[in-house]
Length: 498
Image (tube, rainbow, N blue to C red):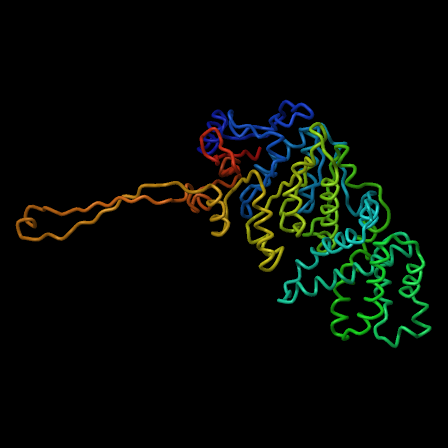
C-alpha cells in the first residue's frame, strides 16, 4: 500500500473521505432525511438538495464526475421518492455510468433512455400546446430552444439582440394564425407559413399567391372563432404580414426570416424531426411518477441536433416542474447536466430561483465561469450566468484551472479580519552602534480583511484521482448561508473514485 492509499484509508476512518455505497434509504416524504453526510455532524439532506441544488466545478481531469458527482448522483437515485432529467454530455460513458448507478439502487426500471435508436418520442410543440397553448408560451418554447443554435454562432455582433427580438416577433405572428386556422401548432406548418408569406405589396393581389398556404391560413384564421385576445393578436398579425413585412427591405426581411427558418429547419429535419416533431409516448409527466429520463444525444456526438433536443427536454421539464403544486411527500425532481454550459439558456436563472417551492432543483457540473459566459454570450449573458450560479445552495470545487473561477470560489468563502505584522531596520547612527551591532528595529501592526481561502487553495495541491493519488479527489465544499459543524461555511473534503 503506497502513501496515498494509506492516507485515503486514514481519511475514511476519520469520516473525511466520502466513499459511495449502499446506505439506508431515507423515508419517503421526509425532507430532513440525510441523503449522505459530509462528516458525522454534517448531513446533506433532501431539503439541502432542493434548496438551491448543487454546482460542481473543476477543470478537465479534476475528477468531478467520477468522484463527488458520482457520489451525489448515487445518493439522489437511492432516494426512491425522486425523478429527474439527465442530459448526457459524454458519448457512451454517461449511459454506462447511470445504468450502473440505477442498478446499484435497485431502480433499473425507473431509468428511461431517450435516444435515436430507441422507441421513445416527445413532440415538443404539442406538449407546449397541451398545457394552455398560449401563443406567447409556444413562441417562448421555440425561441428558448433555439438559443442553443445561437450559442454556437461566434459571429454574433452588437446588433444580435435586435435580430433576436425581431425573430421572436415573426414567430409570434406566425404561431397565432396557424393555431387559429389548424387548431394545432407544428414546425412544418410554421415553416410553410413563413416561406409562403408575401415579399412585396404587389404580391398580395396575385392569384398565385392567394392559393398558397400563408394566404389560406390567414383567411381560415380570420373566419375562425376567436376570444377577444385572439382577435386582437390576429389583427396585429394581419398588420405584420400584410403591411409591415412586404414593405421591409429585402435585406432586413431575409435576415429575420433566415434566423427563424434556421430554428424551424432543425425541428423539421433528420433525427430531430423523428424524435421531437412526430408523436409523444414519453414526457416530463413521467418524471412526476418517479421516473428518470436520460437524453442520450451528447452534443459532442450529435452537434446542434444534440444541443437542440437536450434544450427542448430541459426547458419543457422546467416548465412542468414549475406548473405543479408540490406537497412535502411528493417526489423531488432533479435536472442533472454534466458539462452544463452546453445545455444552459436564459430560462435557467428563472427556474433555479423558483424551483425550490416546487420540489425541483438543478445539479450542474462545469469547468469554469468562462464556459457559461461563452454559452450565454455578451454582457447580458455574463449577468445571466452570475444570476444563475448565485442561486446554488452547495458548491463543490475540485482543482480549478483559471484565476477568475478561483477568485469566485474564494469570494464565496468570504473574508476575515486579520492582523498583519511588519517591521523595518533603521540604519545605525554612530560607530559604537556599528561595533556593538545595535540596530533600531521598528515594528508595525495593522488589521485588514483578507480572503479566508486564497485563490491558490483552489488551483494547487488538490488531488485529481487516479492510481497515483490513491483514487482520491480533493474538493472544497462551500455552503450558502449556513455553517458546517467546524464553524465555517466550507469544508475540505476527499472523495473516493471507488
